[in-house]
Image (spheres, one colour):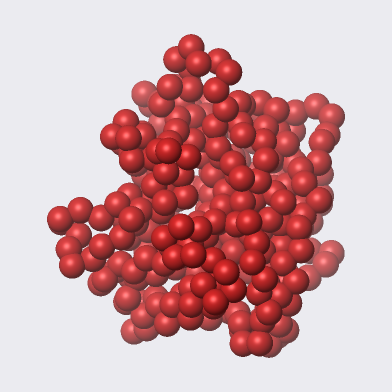
Length: 303
């Protein structure tokens, strides 16, 4: 089974085919549930989004609007970053490492002029997380990575584009995650570059992939890739694999520090604590680790 899963992703990376673009539907699939964190009314709202596919579960989606969204600039449009494992994106996570703090981190970076204002869409996972995030792990008629990406592309993205002032094309639309979620983000970037023009892959689970022999062609996709150096089982958090992938992308036409970034968190392990830290640029407190920050790299203030 592992060989089959690996070959499926390697094939997808090799093909690099464009997606058909977001579809359109009838009425809104989303029902507003309220503000998940007190004091963030009007900036952070949770919704229930219904799935038309019985194999892909309906789920909660939280939308974070950037500073200035309602400050009278009614014609301004914003890029959007779609994040996986949405339950972990704010103050809480089930693993005890603290959430990603995306709301406070984004506001801090925008207000300091380190990134451009952007909308963040936190998409919750389900009990089928592995089948939805790891290409080849699921099988029809059940949940699969392609089925989940269809749900994103054909339901969630069109709803967000209709409900909010977005930049409604691939260059202004990113997808991100960590671990399995990062693997899904890479898969989405390669198979649907017409939908997602930016990829944030933090500590991707490349051990589930065999890239040997993959023929990767250059795509108009900006890629942020990183890892720590320590894993819970005594490994390197995939550092060797992310380094090899970064080198492969450079050989295929990506330019380091321009449309590709490979960052390493020295001493970082596979947890939300360190993914949260690598969202922002490193500081003196992080030395000897140095990294540019996933959000500033993908969404620079001059973008």
